[in-house]
Image 1 (tube, helix red, strand yellow):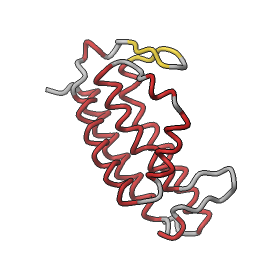
Image 2: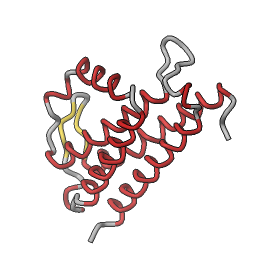
Image 3: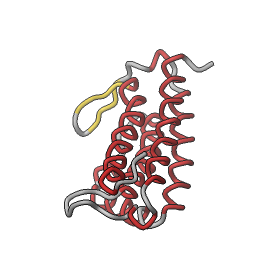
Image 4: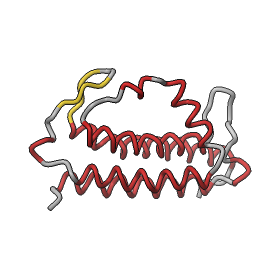
Length: 155
């Protein structure tokens, strides 16, 4: 049986993924790859990030090791940019990786919540890592809603 913390985090992350998609769909299709400034990110780019990172988080929870390949930020940027060109591909990855990530969160035993994993910026516990997808997707939902507000299409 899944413990309350893991169940809460898994369900919260699933809801955040749905909210993220809803935020993107508020933005007119022709504006999803639009950026309000040269240094700002597009709505599709942000959802692509979440789609990729949900899968990376599932991998991290399962392996408990930060993969060396994750330090290749240029490869990550290219992968994200390519993915962000196609909403159907982003959606498919977001759905699949959210499913993988929520299953990985639910599989974490209570006794392992304090296990520390070395990250490039310092150690994090599994309890902190399982909270990351919810935080990240909520943050990007807000960013996408800001884009929608600029366009005048925020409900």
